[in-house]
Structure formats: structure tokens, C-alpha cells
Image (cartoon, rainbow, N blue to C red):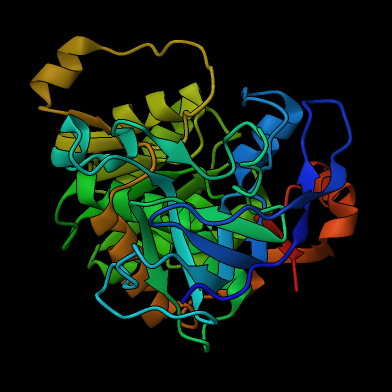
Length: 368
């Protein structure tokens, strides 16, 4: 499986906020034990990529951004198991995606079911470029996969623009549903209807939720949410008291069972807590950047038996759940419309400019 490696490949080097990404060529190094070489086929720009690009979060620079990636295997080191997480054999030429992280499976957190917080954590699209290790992000022709990376072989029938979001947004939502527990016949509120939010609506619908409310400040995203399974739409530009009254009417005064915050907005998280009924669960996903501190009424948390949970990234079980969901339902919902525009790697700066100014759900970078 050690096919001949390419001599070199291109990548887009990010030097920091306010500077243009630089297209450079680097040699492709021989594989180390347990590694794979992948030819990147498609990468979508995630919200965290845009936050880094705009300076809202810090990453070690220079780096190669992009972690929502689909690629084809070029070579597999003989020490790799040559199987994916589902037990399928993998071969050069197979279309795959992989977890955003690799970590020590024997570490304490990995053994606790949170490998995304395990020791020796390596995150694709978040690592400083230091030769000879340069190919570790999506905005490049190649990516070297480290040992203990979760891999899933993809069917050729699944569009790569849809599959690319599996290993970040879709898998993160799968983790959020796991944290929420059984959703059968539950009432749901989702705040923030970006890609996480619309995916959450569809996933909650398929998980048996009885009623799903979508809340956002953008009319277009609210309309999209309806096509992804939302039953009711709430414009969060109106006063919170009016929103709460409307939500109470929809739930016959009981409040919702589960609220997912995908926005990271403190106002939205506070509103979600207030919207929960007795025994409700809040799952917070979106606040992965600095925000103001929340104002929480501890008496209400206690008297209403409220549970607050946070999820950052996901584990291998979530990744498999996300794959199963997307494999079954990518055509049930309009996931094909998520990527608004595609760009080649050579004009990646135009792609970021478009993504920041237009704020589509996703921008795609086609690499073949």
C-alpha cells in the first residue's frame, strides 16, 4: 500500500489576520509509522476558519486552515490497520473523511469517551507549519493523517460538498444530541441557524422530536431552517419577553424540553435557559470564542431541575452516528444547497472575502 509519493504539493499558508493567504509549494515527506497520505478533494470553510481569519480566535501561525475535508487515499503505511471506524478495509483511491483530531487512545480522557481532549492531541487545520510537517490542513493538495485518526470510507454516491461537513459540523451536532439524551416526543428549541443549527433541526426530526423551534436574527436562515425540519420560527430581533410569551403559547406553558445553542450568543443562551421547562436540558455548542459572562438565575436552575451541558468537537461514536445520518438523509433535506459558491485553491483569498462578506452557510474549495 506504499504507492509512490508525489514529490511536492501546493498549500495556502495563513500568516495571521489581516494578511493574504500565500500559495506555496512544499516537498511531500515519506510517511511515518501508521500514517496515511491523502489527496484532498474538497474542503469547506467552517465558521471557526472564518473566526481565525478575522482574528476572533487565535491559531499558531503560519498554518494551513481547513478541517472539513474529503480526500482520496494516496498511500498507507504498512503499520496502519488499513481499516476505517466501521471495520471496512481502505485502499489507495478510496474516498474518505476523518476526525478533526488524533490523540492517544490510552490517555485518561480518551478512556473516558472524550478523545478530542486526549493527550498528544493533534487537530487538522489548527497546527503550526514546521517543515517537514506541513500538510495537515484542508487548504492544501495533500494531508498526512496521523495514527489514531478516525477514518470513514465514503460512498462515491455522496456528493463531496456535502460529505466535507461531516467531520466537523455534522459530527458536532451528533455529539450535542448524545448529550441531550433521548429526544423521542420532546419539544426542542435551537438558537442559531447556521450549518450547525439546520443540521440539528434535521437530526432532531429524525430522532423523533415532536416539535422543533428555530431561532435566529436572520430571516433567510430562518426560512432555511423550515426546510430542514423546523416547525416554528422565532425572530430573535424582537424583544426577549415577547419571544418568551410566544414560546410559552406554543408549549402550552410548559416550556421546551431541550434547547441547543449553536450561536455562541450570550443573549441566546440566556433566552434558552429561560425557555426550558421543568427537567429541561440546555446543550451549548456555539460559544467557542470569548463572550461576555452569562447572567443565570441559580434558583430557577435548581427549582426547575435544569441541566446545562457543553460539547466541543465530538468522539468516535458521534462521528459514526453523523456518517449514518448523512448517508441516509443527505438527500432528504436540502444539504446540496449548503455550499453557496465554490473556488479553486489558487483564489482562496477570494473565497474568504466572499465568506466573510456574504455569510453563506458554507463556501467550498474544490481541489481536483
